[in-house]
Picture 1 (tube, protein in one colour):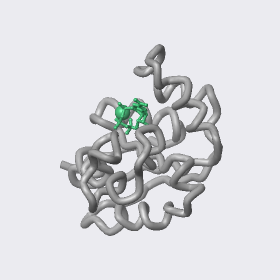
Picture 2 (cartoon, rainbow, N blue to C red):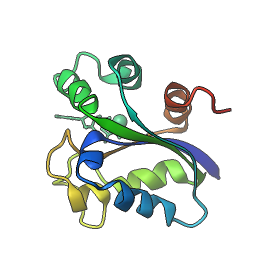
Picture 3 (cartoon, protein in one colour):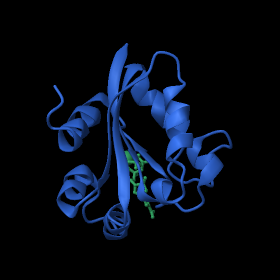
Picture 4 (cartoon, helix red, strand yellow):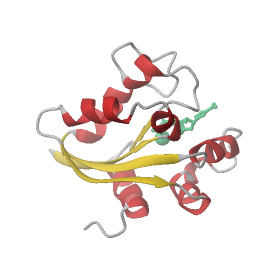
Length: 137
Ligand code: RTP
Ligand code: MG
């Protein structure tokens, strides 16, 4: 089933020069298409909407601060089972628990600075795409 998902390459990925590497892994998957892409500085307002489910958790404030610490890359990816698929490429939230071969497993060590966000369901994807690309149909 063709789906779409919202992906963020977090500020650590941009700072460390890993954008090309990570985009390449996504781009090479059969039948997936990048349909929107933008480098941008995320502000608090956008991050509060995006991370609404985490408000009040101990990691929320440091997470927002980190996500606003430099430019990020926001993109929409479309294709077959892309929601589950990008999360599989990313690996689990904690990079130390993520297998080598996954993005977080290959490049991450810190839970917060885990390089990539990807929508976790079709509902989240539609909600998040509206936040980052309100002009997209
Ligand atoms: P994401 O939403 O970024 O794709 O990551 P996720 O689903 O794997 O993780 P989630 O539980 O939604 O948490 C969102 C982001 O918050 C940071 N985090 N820090 N204990 C901690 O310090 C902690 N826990 C989560 C990570 O950046 C995580 O991706
Ligand atoms: Mg999440």
